[in-house]
Length: 239
Length: 195
Image (cartoon, rainbow over all chains, first blue to last red; front, side):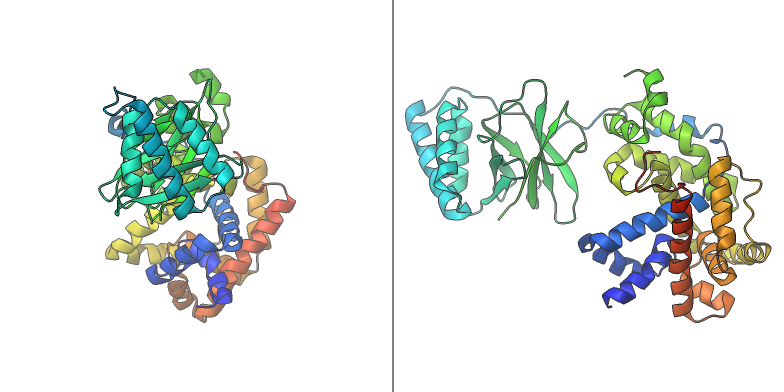
């Protein structure tokens, strides 16, 4: 179907008046065409005005809604893993972690040496030696995928996800927040976004995720939320 | 934020509160928009009991997936109505006998023309919408009404009006765009308004 043919369908699409196969074609097109997406929003707004009426909200339905609400937020899937005592000497563990992460970042992500240097410095300040050591092993693992997270803010971070869904978040490039938190999100290929947990500031953290996760992103939030309330400050694709 | 604040909060703020599992925010959204959602479902389905079930479904989805609402893409009400419309059409299309009845009703609707007179929800906006509908060429108006209120696909509308499918498809789009232009001129539609 050409773009012009797809455009011609947008009116009927906005009124749910297309066949399922056409609907699927338009859905796919809208993902990549902001102009058509904007047109559908506009036409839906018009349809919404047509569909408005002065009815009162029906009696009794609210009680049924309340009765069906899932009131308790689902628990965040991971808690930040705090430092336990180091098995190896801290200096050795750090040195290995730094070397491995530095090498992997350099080779796989191709980031500049300046960025690398800041990762190294931050890691040396980190106290989560076990997590740092596990992250180091993960980077070298053959089943690991790595995402270099960046954004318009100029901030950077990295995420590593192993084949079993064990992940590590290297937040060395994020400034410490005083009254807000960072929330880490994973997005699947279909765009489903799941919270991976929250972190207070820079450090190396462990998390678990559905191994099919494709993208990782970070938002700043006032408190843990079930869906992002603002645009991500950094994002990256696992590769 | 207290419940009193919520009654003055924008729809976008309500949805943020809903995403934080604040039940009173959902209650306020329901108070503002539950009637409109119910009105549309009942109009399409012709059955108050099924319409009520649909209202319940629409607001439960807002509770479970508040992130699906993007305030930059339009108002909360039009988002809820779009969901309600899509689900109503699903119900219509899954029920053959209801479908036949609706086809007859829809034809009558098209013949009678769309009467907003007794559906006064906001006098000014209702005036603008009525004017925008009346300014439409009759062929565009009939196609839009059969599709939107009859729950028909454009192909079915083409059958009902005995017009080529391509013509009906174009008329629906051009009619909606024409209405939008006229409503924008009347300031009844913003570019992704908050209310």
